Image (cartoon, rainbow, N blue to C red):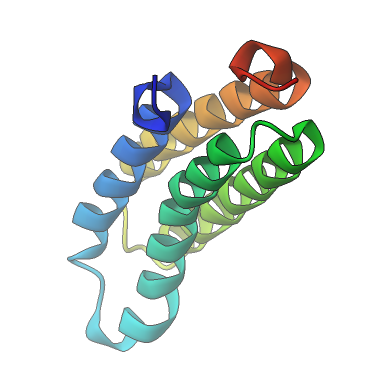
Length: 121
């Protein structure tokens, strides 16, 4: 089993791709600020999860990288809130993306609290 087989990874990847698509319509003046930030933080969830999975031999490292995932997920939620406040996304899109992000957070929390289930010694 690889990291790509984990449900939290799959859901985080799906959300990152949805965010990529929705940010294509953001104004050009946001390209190097809001657009870049929300794309980076959403992608970092998957990247950090990949790192965590490869460090699962060392439980503390595994959990530490997963807490990085959780932090990036929280940052993504903040950028989505800014996107809504700036009227770049609809209330519906915001609610859907926020719920997906919260689900990813719940799954990450499970992984953090149960590292042994993911191959940690």
